[in-house]
Length: 194
Image 1 (cartoon, rainbow, N blue to C red):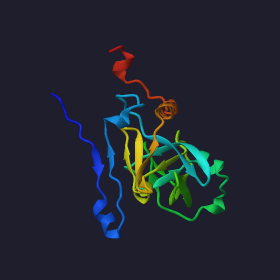
Image 2: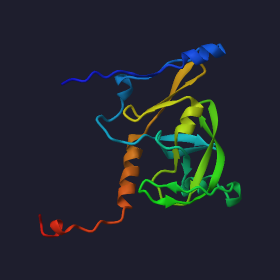
Image 3: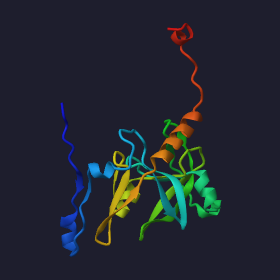
Image 4: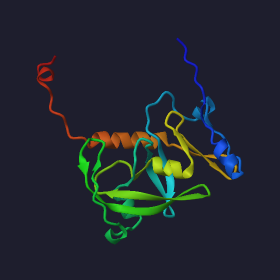
């Protein structure tokens, strides 16, 4: 059985016409897969310019409601506890554990010539990623991400611009995350060679 692949489109022209400016259509096609390893199940990991620094190992997670910063980025940006504001809502980690945040901080993210300010929540826990950008960043930029195509596309200056994912980095992050997992005790059937 063959499945036809249709391009993913987001047509924002109606709202832009109301404002008097046309916006390009954001779409993904098979051409966007050129240069990627296919098939794959890699996460979308990119490099972003945050607070004036090129930051690698940033996970794009459109399923997340908050942007998260991990200790590597916090230390790399030379932030101090007084830079964070009070915050008492717990977060749930990938493993389902409750993580208490150290607090939020608003930081600029530059993508090409576009700059959006994002509230990151600082959590003091291990992650192979330096940060997670989520729906708020995507929405502020007017962006659409595609894990399959390993790209984030966004309208800027009447054109479609893009940030391309780094599959090698995504795979390194996955290996790092797996190697840090606690070992699982074998079940009875495994011990008996079954």
